[in-house]
Length: 80
Image (tube, rainbow, N blue to C red; front, side, top):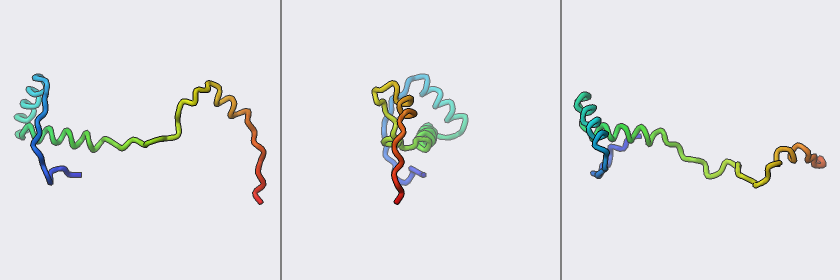
């Protein structure tokens, strides 16, 4: 996925040490700080997967649910 089609200028606040490291890395790679930030954000956003709304696991409040489930034997239903 490419995010370079429509770009908007934005401002971010960075700790001094991180900004210094970003400047050094940009100089070493011969690229801009903005390009490095975009690259890092694209990687991070690409890694993110939508979380499922529910996977069917929840706290029932019962501590013996597994034991009880093993003791319950429903009557088989006729398939006819």
